[in-house]
Length: 142
Image 1 (cartoon, helix red, strand yellow):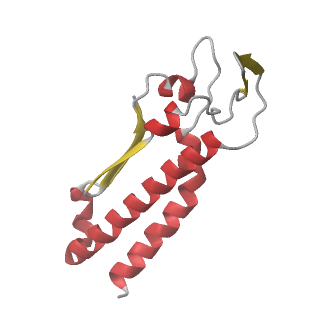
Image 2: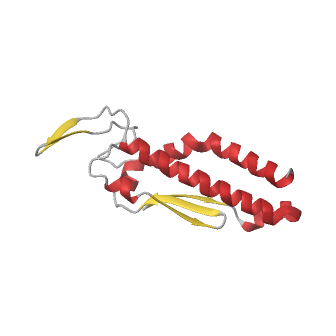
């Protein structure tokens, strides 16, 4: 199992004491939005995109694999179908429970990494800061 956790601890809200409820709700919306976008980025890049790995044939199907460092190339669709987001208040988990998802992300002694979760987070990191800025504006400038 591999997962990315986005979480704001309730004790971190103390500095916003007079605005706690409004701020917490605005940040909860940010966490849900960015987690969904990270998941969608992973699914899109695994499902589509240029690949530069080996080409091989399995029975009647020709497949081009991903090269090291690229998003893994979908073959059966199992990884894409397994990518989930789970939400709780001020918390979201994004991940996959297929046994090979961690091996793709970090590699093994037999295979170089084909990361999919960290690059998806990195691709959305600037958006996250913008969403947080908007949440702060909505909290303190109604």
